[in-house]
Image (tube, rainbow, N blue to C red):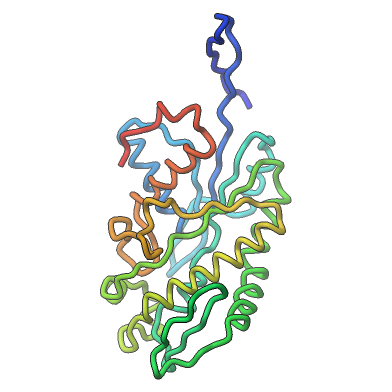
Length: 273
């Protein structure tokens, strides 16, 4: 890979090669922006980042967002070796599409293994299997196809990073929601209950875990320090919108990558956030 091999001393005084750092590439949709911002913060402090991060290039509201097409990223991953790592932050917001705006007919569902809560008297109970089937079909045809293409393109280790969990604070979402939620009537209909939104995120996570397992892709959950006791995103990691996390969350992701994949290099990585 054109990288220098570091040397460390053994107990006998002989010099032995130290494992070289793998190349780590990250690609994703909007959630990857938090990691890109964290990398920029590190560069400003002259602190090394373990990841090169790219966001899907696309047109939105008449302007370009992102910096790389999926096809170009696939081509880049074909040059990696089995010691390298590809991180995916593809997709991640399907749960929010289903659950952010309060539906005209309030509804709830009971997930397997959960103690059923007492639903609102006006809430209609939707069968879990019906929602699971809808999520599985949608994800298999969308993000699942992208993950499959990524897995087939490279011999590197592929890890899919689960998107941040929902924000519990409905007032924050009401104030800072994105345009597409406004178009869906959020201002007049309001935000759905936090518990329901968390259930949808958990459902999405379970489906993605199944898809990744079938493809031979590892799954990385959100950093534990960024999630509160109930499973929501902690307030200090909120971005100024309904669904995304900020650069501090991205820094948490970078540190988790270091902890998991570069433990021998951890002493050189700190004082960032």
